[in-house]
Length: 114
Image (cartoon, rainbow, N blue to C red):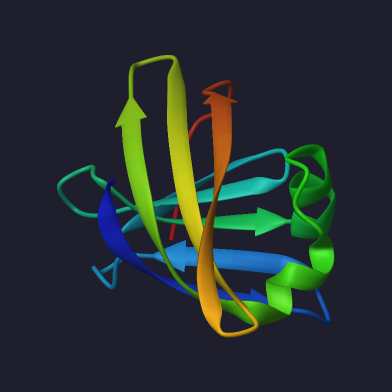
């Protein structure tokens, strides 16, 4: 599922950053999401603010965030919306479990060019 993604979790600010490692050209901020685009208009990253609340809605304990070891991101976009599936990998004891977070973001604002 999707491409391998680097995942960083900032516990102090409760945010998750998933990115492909490609250069970010500009960003789109919608609600609790900041979506990053490359020069070729590809989505190359997403920052999720208040991520523990989003995990709670996906029935994933927030305590799992400290055990993230990797993940994959699958994206699709239209003129009016962005659909993201993050498959996060958590180390649980001796094994790694994968949990999916599905995110639908309507495009209701213009991009913020960095």
